[in-house]
Length: 424
Image (cartoon, rainbow, N blue to C red; front, side, top):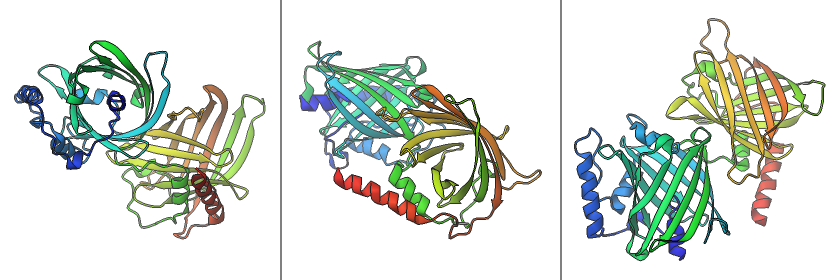
């Protein structure tokens, strides 16, 4: 049953050793894959490997993520990048007794394949591949589990709502069948899953899950510790300029002014602070907001390497130890950036943020933005708690060594996190 529980997870497949597998496909499997390959012959898409065995799956995973010319039908599912999931399992829909957290990565490769890598809480790794069949207007999916391949098929439903049915089960699961339904939500940043495993037509195991998108393909996940380590790095003035200069605030020291309205007060509160903007490497810009020598927040921004108008932002509020992840979209013509926070997979963080920001350079200048204004809304559990109007203006350059920010506080916070990790 343990093997079948891992099989049921569908997108999370453990006990796989794809790199060293000498898996020999069955005759039924070869026949099915031959049929699939024939269906793809008369299209402009690359052929499907025949057979789709462990070697083929690993070869597709080894390719770089490339959205160029990727077929539209495969874009209806989850976004490429890194995902975190929480799954509840049990013998009946109302008896989901087990809970498990895991993660996976998704890349688009070779114009038609979604390639997956799954990681369990114990760091076991599995791989999967899915693609679209134009001749049938349907999808097919292969994955490795305990050195066996399972295959599923699905019709093309609307808006990425896909219902999978197993078409080839491994020998170790003889007599079992698998059903899986997946539906993207929240503009594709979340995914709901429902799964059922049956034995001779009778349900024996159910699964419900939610998956949450956390970053672009190949992007290193950033937690509190990683944010603090990036904030310690010095500004590098020699880094290559980003492509969209007007989108990026000029590195250096900024003067900011926020006007805050809260639901508990009729009075608006105004306070001023300093913002340090550092470019610490090719992929990360660090924003440190300081008032009276105290760090109010640390913000890490990382661009989408495949789409220059999208950025990930991770905001750390040390005062209440809150971490908010979000994504911003840049409208180059309007000069406005919009931001929406992403939900946390375990629901522990109920804070959400939405906002917009307009950045401007000096008239006629192609330099980085030197002033900005905008607003943000903060919600707790969906309830609007405050609205913040923001303004900022660039003041002066930031030296390579940095200034006005002592690493003493950062070292202290890192030591606190290290001690908590050791205690666990």
